[in-house]
Image 1: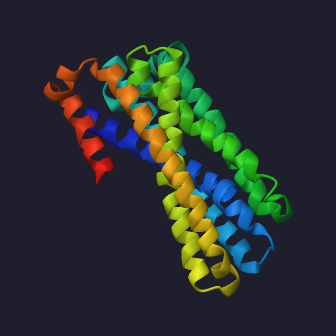
Image 2: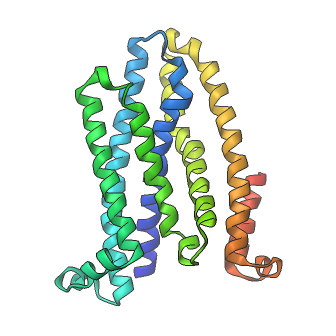
Length: 251
């Protein structure tokens, strides 16, 4: 039961981080060139994306707290109700790699909350903050590599970098799908945005193709690190999972 809850919490946290990064990458790379000339409809899209980022941040924070709680219980072999009644949580927080990475990620989430609040409060600074939004959200997503299978396998720095690139590519592509849908929904009802829809779609398509290439290369690299041989690819549960992912990419 505990392992199942851990998987759910971790998956929710990764999903929230991917959506957050995808939202700001979409706004910076895909939507950015479409900002001229400015329009009220475009401003509304930007506000919707900022609200989406805010909800993603809330989900990332709550799932991070839940993940930490469950991880302490799992590492120390404690019932959930006793996690914070002992010093076990302090040991995990300050003396383990997971705890140190978790602290770094919480700090990034706090910075992101401040930036989102500034974006809502200071509309004139909104576009100037997009680069900062993107950097923080990408750092938040990439840092997940240090809590991944590659980190658990004591991988080399280049292997962890490959895992980080894998996550960032997923964020830019998969995380950008909902922001793209938000833009297209508004563009369908707005003549000024409708004229910009085709260039936006083209930029997103180019970005997506690049991300798929990165995902394939980094995925193969990470898979080889974890599986270790062609034989294991066909005889282990993780190998079968990797083959399933490759099949989905093929579709």
